[in-house]
Length: 77
Image (cartoon, rainbow, N blue to C red; front, side, top):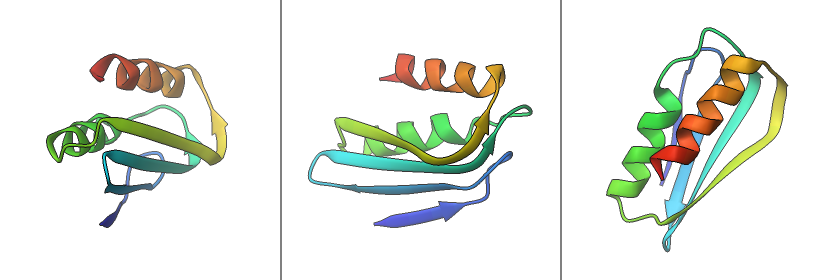
């Protein structure tokens, strides 16, 4: 299953299966940030994914707000 949503500041793809989920972020990951990343992580956890990989290979830049989102995402799990 693959989903694509428009997130401010950039798009997020979510893929899951076999207990592992991958969330790919791309574009700038800067303020203002939304709760979209957290919602995607929670959705994958509800689907039974227990290992969630955040793919940041396409993130062009990140600021303190983006790092804060990553810390909050880590604390969700």
